Length: 373
Image 1 (spheres, rainbow, N blue to C red):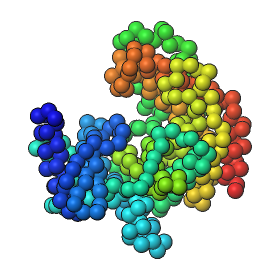
Image 2: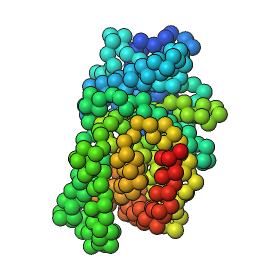
Image 3: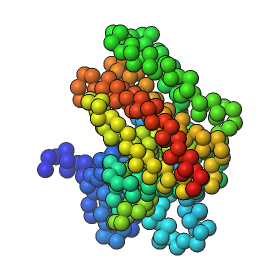
Image 4: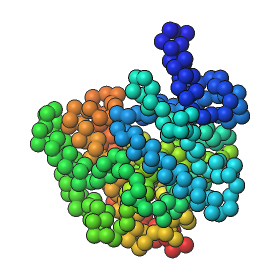
């Protein structure tokens, strides 16, 4: 073992001991495959295991606001289960539990300026990076629908907008126009066909934003990172707990629905170079929609239900805009593995939008049936 690794292990043990955990810390090892925060599994002499995370405060710069958002959401979720008569030990398997420091704070700041937090580790659970079956898709939809339902009576204004303009299509298009104007990489000429397609759809993609400004869509508390591996399943593939609450903040429910569908419905990879492989998996779309609406239909207003399909179009469109903007700005935001990686990602996302256009009537019928059930 290198001296550096030894120092890191000693440091992590020291940091883990700053939290009010059960027993003596025995081991701290890297855990999971997250790309934003550094996560470690903490084993103690007690029966409970823990997750220790170093918060990426370069992305989440308002750590106090971030942790207060998480605290408010966790308490609301737990109170909802308590009102349903669930026992505390059952609730703690369905909702993340934040462990405070020994001095009562929500996070610990180390001597190097790093921010750390601890949750109870939910044992005997599993997650999938890719949806493999309609049963899994249904459970994922149901999990996020129930999550939104539990938070539907909580005033969204109590939460901080932790990533301002995250799903604001006007903001994303403004960034793209700025990149086009500056053209620092001399790449604009090679992507004119993509730009023409993007701006031809601009009016349609503003639907959710406009309905929100008109007061037709209420601001709700949304997750904003509804990829499937943010749902923990039990050993029978039943949804157990929604995790990764860093991006929970005020938003429109169509954003969560659209982003989940973006990752589920695409048979190709997000950076698929062979565009013939970017086709729709309609059965997974239908299963997710049924699961989601089995929980969400009772609290959504009519405009929110109508906004679901625009959300399905908006999220891959907006992701394509973001990839293309980064490509025109010298690839400074997204990690790339080859020079045209962001361009390939852009084309794959816009091909997905075109596939959605081809099947729009079919998707609309599926949603109408799921809403009416």
